[in-house]
Amino acid sequence: MNPSDTLIIYVSPKGENTARIIAREVGDCDIVPHKELPTVGLSDRRNIIFIGALGICVRTIAPIMRDKYTDPAVVCVDSSGRYAISVLSGHVGGANDLCRRVAGILGAEPVVTTQSDVTGTWSLDTIANRYGWLNDADKVQMNSAIFSLVNGEPVGLIIDVKDAGTRELERTLPDNVTVITSTAPGGDIPTQGLKQIIAVTPYTYRTSVPVLYYRPRVLTVGVGCRKGCASDGVGAYIEESLTAKHISPLSIRAIATIDLKKDEPLIAELANRWSVSEADIYTPDDLRDIVVPNPSEKVHEVTGVWGVAESCAIAASHGGPLLIEKQKGRLSESSDFTFAVALDKNVTRCGHIEIVGAGPGDPELVSVRGKRFLSEADLILYAGSLVPKELTYYAKEGCVVRSSASMNLEEQFELMKEFYDRGLLVVRLHTGDPCIYGAIQEQMAFFDRYGMSYHITPGISSFQAAAAELRSQFTIPEKVQTIILTRGEGRTPMPEKEKLHMLARSQSTMCIYLSAGIVDDVQSELLQAYPPETPVAACYKLTWKEQRIYRGQLKDLARIVHDNNLTLTTLLVVGDAIDNREGLSRLYDDSFKHLFRK
Image: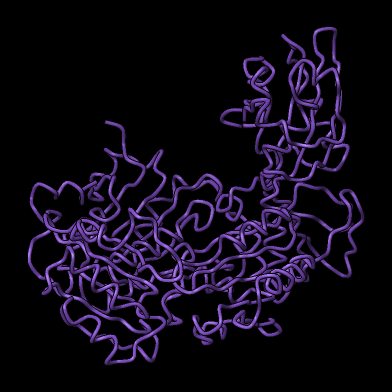
């Protein structure tokens, strides 16, 4: 049997118990007593957890220590499980993360002494792996950049893309780092007394100080070629063309072509060269409406599209801009090809609109991601009285905060587009989860029409808050396995098949939105299928400071709503799942225990 990546070594019988506890949580690993180590060996282990004195640990691993780029991650834990110490290969090998994980398992204190962790600065030697960037710096260049950063020397930061990694860098900017506005690719970067520059970019710049480049994989290469095109030298030719325009080939993420060319050897060779799992293949119908800057009648006659390389590059980049328009290459009589290069639209640094689900009301129930967007936004446009104003208190200083309650749709669009066109971040804050009666469809149609960058951050819906506040599981084993989210028929007509009396036939747990004002009709329809004694709850402003919840039976639902003057922001819940404590989930049967084992 092959040895596991993780080896746990213990010295004493007490340490063996600690080792067993760690092994149960870590999973696939080998456990050996220290005295048997010569029969097991340390070679080819990625992680070593040593249970015993630090001195013995150091002497044990000394023979295998080489450098931080090849050493295994080593963590030492005292036999009582009080401390977990990151000993070797803290960042690159992952010992710091392993140390924190082991400490969490044991309730121990993690001891991490790596300077970037102690000072709270970026881990330059691991950040590329974390965010999927490439980095070709040698050890000397990397160590020099780390030294400048952690020792507080003036460092410049160039960011030419927008992704999770660059957002994190901007959010955690150290005091000694200054963001530099980049010039055109290949242009001069002013140093202004800087000792080091860190750049996350597909481009290359001229500068008088060292630059540590991280290459995000954000480029798409569209390729066209003659039938049977020889592939020798084509990849190198394209890379040289990129380099001549100060663009790094390391940033190539995808290769794309038309289905007519999908079996050409050139396509497979380029995909292999750039570590692309497989090429993106498009049909003429996929590409027909893409406008290219260099249309060709001849190409259109043969393929049905006006340009293979350019249209495929644009399609694979989700409509991003072309950095290199169609280029023709001819390396031999049997090697005619075209290529074009585009930047993924999703990473372009432009304005962005994030539609954020605010949750049911309590500011602490917004998602972590939603809170982050609120704290970074330049404009927060929130849904008036439907969203507690306290949620906007997460805004940074200088953020513009507006209520949309008094605005029509055109005024909302005008305001959001004003900030968007300035390259700023807009948060459109909706109550609950935007997908449930969120009124975002018209807004997304507007964003689509203008080609605007936008995304949705989901939120906790009031039906989930209702289950929590009612301390109820809305599904009951073998009785109710469906939750229906719906509304009564008011000014907005309901499809015939979705009328309440039709849905009520299933006897599911039903959560009825926006219907307190027509509760008499709601009750009448529900009584056509539910028994009069069916439990109900009228939930007003769930999780708000003004929250009120009234329980009762279906036959009394209308009276409950009227007597307590419940109107807007009231969710009506109907079903036997309310307050139910009967039935046992099969999840706890012995036959399901395998779900918890690795």
